[in-house]
Length: 273
Image (cartoon, rainbow, N blue to C red):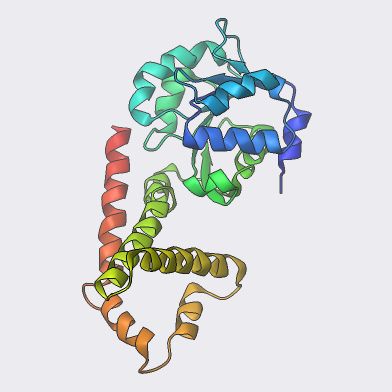
């Protein structure tokens, strides 16, 4: 198990390319964990006010003269990598750890454009509150020390899982990378259904939001499986059972989510090409 404190034991600069929602969440986690701001370089053509304010704490924002770094984190949108990748290459030496959180961008593509020792990772947006989960896959030349450093960088925003098969990353993207949007849609549509059943809009929205977030927290804290938690709410012949007979029917959640995850997986593969 690694921790953010391990970042304090490294000496080289850490370059963050792309300080949007995900990159910004990671940066917040590193600084909260005690990383010296003077070690951080942020490359962001349109920095937010929050990122600009960090320059007063010692972060170097968009420096004019790049030089090889210990770590380069690539957090730009995949569609921007064709332009951004070559511009980042001066920051990369053979021994530089290149950590990418771009969807659909393969290790081979990163190696060809930037070089370095590449780790491909897929976080998700709960990283903004320290409750994200990230899956990472290393290239064959990533050292044990670089893997530990990657783990510390990613664990600043939540849990980390490692895999050895890069082919799994498309499905990872579809399940956990895109997954928060599915949960937000559930809250949205549950509120809409409550309004249709006669509830005032404000009350339906509050009930839906708190029910989804509360159930998620219960799932997080409980050692019981999701199936067991569902069964514990479901009395035979009761109201929950009536609703689940629809949601678990032939046109219910399972086939719908299978199609949704398959569509996201296919799109991730398309991005890679």
